[in-house]
Amino acid sequence: MSSIYDHGVEYSSITRATTIPLESLEDPSLNISYVRLQWVDLINNIRCRVVPLPYFLKLLESSRPGVGVAKAALGLVYMMLAPGFNSSGEYLYVPDLSTIRLCPYAPGEAVVFGWFKEKTPYLGLDNKMSLDVHLCPRTTLQRVVRESSKTGIEYLVGFESEFILLKSTKPVVAVSNHSWTATNGFPSGSVVAKTLKEIADGIQSSGIELQMYHAEAAPGQYEMVTGPLPPLEAADALIHTREIIYNTATKNGLRATFAPRIYMDSAGSSAHTHISIHSQNNEKVPDKLSPIESSFLASVLDNLPALTALTLPTQASYKRMADGVWSGGTYVNWGTENREAPVRLSNATSPSSRNFEMRFVDGTANPYIVLAGILGAGSVGIRDKAELTIKDCPGPKTAAQLTESERQALNITQRMSLTWEEARENLHNNKVLRDSVLGSEWIEKYLVVNQTLADALNLDGEDEAAAVTRLVEFY
Image: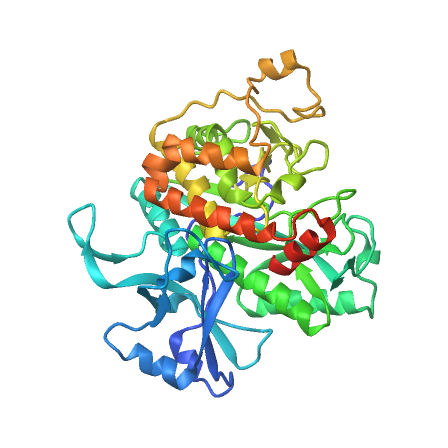
């Protein structure tokens, strides 16, 4: 029931993604000739196999539809193979037929996500035979969501996709200079205006709700805001949105990058993640958080220094996370409509649309892993009825601007991980993520691949310009 406090569009936990049914692939009016079997690896590279439609349909008639993918695929960075991965072994990549979408940037093509599966069953820890690949990012998120659903907790997730359009990468040159949310960011008739409209049209034609787009603060920087969906569907939609952004820009002679911060005298690019919590036992009122919301937030904040190893996975990520640049700052805290807090409480007095904006996420992070970590940590807090001891920091002073005694009064006592190395150490030592959410083996393999990524991005040594070029070409 709405109240005088309510504002914003209300979404319910039954919200679902709009995809196309399998039979539409053979619709003559769509003229589909190829299907992309697409996945996202541990370093957030989007990879695919392009399969002619006749063979794809033939695959679906087999006893176990799927294509073989080398197990090394989840440990590959450029042509560098992370320690612990080798050339032997093969997974079966099984299409998830509920995820089919058209590719607006590639007429005649559709895309489908899937699951990495073992070819041969193995005995799991529960003494049951299994085909699951625990390192599969979609499988990891699916498991976390299923566990929370058992307790009656459902989540909706929406994303803001910030990106920069470049004229070139060698040297790195933005397509425009403009003010934040100003109309001069996409003047009529310009290649930028044309590109942004094509991106917006492509997102919507793919069945993804586009809420708005606008110019952001940095040179050539823009943002596409998409509507909330259940976690797995939201991550799928985000990856499809990024593919639309990147490929549409390329078709118009530009380069889109989601790199965290390429101009140190301007704002960085993020992937702000909006999460709302839904449960029959989660009665929301205008003037305060519900017990479930409070426990969720408490656990996210408690595990935040470790979560950033998943949500800010590159050394470049920590160039964006600073005080005073609207990135969320460097203190573990939360604030009502405070964009200098790592967690912003949005629409605080509107129970129907209230959500947490996670500002400590950027576009180099795999969204399935991001959501598995955040939702997993939050769900543990709900399970354990964690107490929220950090008080609201709504401003006007940010946590960094408060005196030490003022921070103590709000129980703001912990810093974010200030470096990539610190975040990795915090993840390695975090008991909640290790024992209750991701598992020890998963974390160790993730950290090994993450280290290999850092090695790859640092191949240019002290050449800062070359390193930025490598970063924007990789992300």
